[in-house]
Image (tube, rainbow, N blue to C red):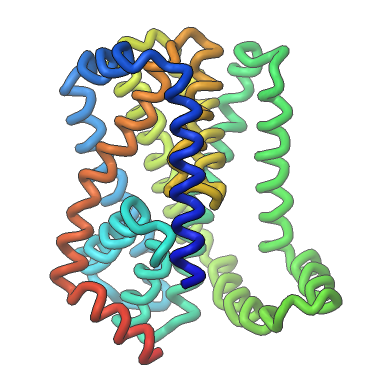
Length: 321
């Protein structure tokens, strides 16, 4: 019941935000913008999504190779199932939870499954922050005089601080002692178990280098994909802006207050891209087209989910853990 209420609240928030955004948009122009997109740009994004997910799966396999031997084809199947859940059922059973279950099913190592999923997400975000920091060097002049430099400082600084707490032993110990004092619902022991597995990667510089390189390729590919799709919509905006705006919109869409970031993401696109010459219709179309294309491709994961036994298999597996 609690999960259903949470889902309904997020759906209502997404609907409310989208209604507010669409009120200020000419719907006839919005439709014309959708209809004007170059089909080749959409095809490019679909193919790019398949490629980036394949690279992401390879990254996951590199992470797991230290502790678990699972074939790439099996991991690719699990990865797409996770993408399907992230796009279609993000608040009922999260994609990472489903990926974790299937990995546990094949490996019988829950701590390894959790640590590998965390490293997969973390490396992707680390690459995104590094790309953003580098893009800010030539791109600062583009956003000077706006509130955006402050947002980027908070974003990159917050990630750096979190990373220090995770990877620097004394800082992690201090954080855990602080959590002990505020009685953080007994989660400390679980975090310590997970942390010990995670720290095993510190002595494997080759693994860290490989997964970071994969993450740079994936994140860079996503940004270029947005640029190609934007160009297909007739948006005459330099690539540099995409390297600044896409990381910011990605983080904003992660806020767990709407359904898959719907509404929040579109609002961010309108705010940012209209600052540099795009129309509201182009900005919201760019966001919705990207999401729709990726969601369509991720239906492959839905097919794999059914092939693996579907909801019944997941329920039985989780109840047996």
